[in-house]
Image 1 (tube, rainbow, N blue to C red):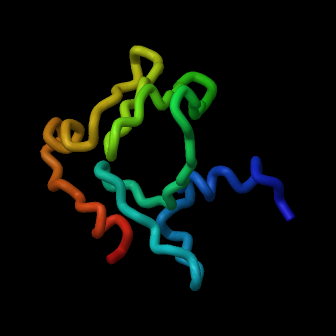
Image 2 (image 1 turned 45 degrees about the horizontal axis):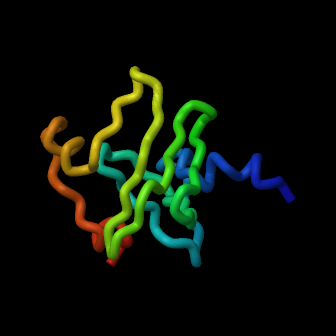
Amino acid sequence: MPGITARLPRLLGMVPSCVPVLEGFPPRPQTAHGKIGIMLVLSRKKDESIVINDDIIITVVEIRGDKVRLGIVAPKDVPVHREEVYQAIHGLTPVKSAEIAGA
């Protein structure tokens, strides 16, 4: 049985779209930029962080009601946008949460 490190690419949605969806698993959501993958969901509390690829850090700065403020530290050459801004920049049609969840 492979460890979590060996399974991370699959968990992070880095599996080619030609790989079939296994029965009993949720459908692979399509992201704003057209890539297909499985969403990794993590829980964090205020002042806790997530590290991506050794050079991107996402920190929960504040939680106020149903809004969460995130702080993002990333290299200058990595663009960071809210999804709706990314869609506007690239002329994409907005994707609704229900569509992503397969509802």
